[in-house]
Image (cartoon, rainbow, N blue to C red; front, side, top):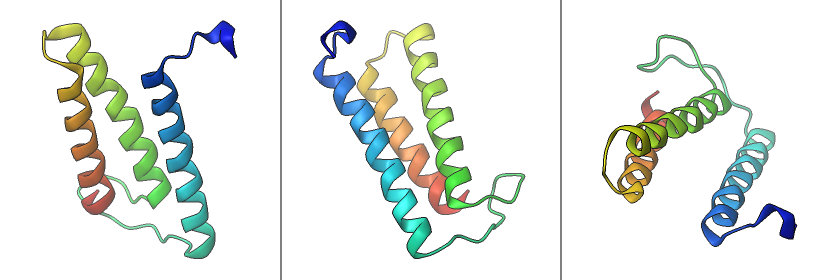
Length: 90
């Protein structure tokens, strides 16, 4: 693994994504989700909303890095808030 030059933030990032996927898989096995319609224009399941949230978090981070001098920690806070809103009401 040394060829990948893992840093602590990178390892935490990928570990968190893996933990989220494992948690969602266990939740789906225990309690299968039903599609529902929230503020998104399509009916989605929990897994759909997680995927949309992770994808949009990547775009939030890219926008902050590419277009603003703001801290990446702000992008993280906005991404977490967006993911929570999306999972609850999306």
